Length: 199
Ligand SMILES: CC(C)(COP(=O)(O)OP(=O)(O)OC[C@H]1O[C@@H](n2cnc3c(N)ncnc32)[C@H](O)[C@@H]1O)[C@@H](O)C(=O)NCCC(=O)NCCS
Ligand SMILES: Nc1ncnc2c1ncn2[C@@H]1O[C@H](COP(=O)(O)OP(=O)(O)OP(=O)(O)O)[C@@H](O)[C@H]1O
Image (tube, rainbow, N blue to C red; front, side):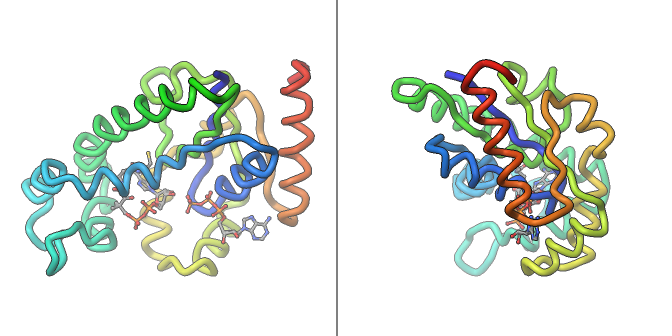
């Protein structure tokens, strides 16, 4: 099964590019969603409380994601601490989902927001890494329009790799600085070529 990873900074348009491939019939895995599932496990909650304190849990004892984000994205050390707890569990779930999909699908799209490095990541055996890029101010504006707090978005972006690093690692680059239709056109054109073995 071909593994196609979509990387890009917050607000770049990964979900939109993923949606265009899903409309072409591909199954997908959203690692943000896998990350949310992992946070509901008791042993993960226990590790997070030990690392970040009791106040990352709400009254029901579930992880309060905004509260955790406020602590985890303040600096590189805290983000690494978060990743060291969540990533191994995300990796396990990802491997299980890939095994299941491999029985029935030729290809899968994986939206991977926290991508850092091709050699030591879930994308180590990627068949294709697609970077979705957009200018920083546009990304912040879009994320804020989608309901995110501006300072929170800036903190998260500061913890992510840069577009220059994404360009270096990617096999394909889409520029999402125009309309959604323009992004979709780039995605579908690439997919048609990839399917035909020309990309
Ligand atoms: C900190 C948490 C609780 C915040 O939850 P919240 O619902 O507010 O955000 P959500 O998960 O939907 O992520 C939104 C965006 O934040 C950014 N982001 C999330 N996690 C990370 C991270 N570890 N490093 C850099 N950016 C991140 C991405 O751009 C992502 O698309 C959550 O993001 C989390 O548990 N992150 C660690 C797991 C992880 O790395 N997930 C990303 C997929 S691999
Ligand atoms: N070309 C575009 N024109 C206008 N709005 C756009 C465009 N591309 C994306 N958006 C909007 O910008 C927001 C961010 O896009 P999207 O959710 O696809 O980004 P993302 O890379 O998945 O972000 P995140 O890291 O937060 O998951 C969404 O509300 C989306 O509808």
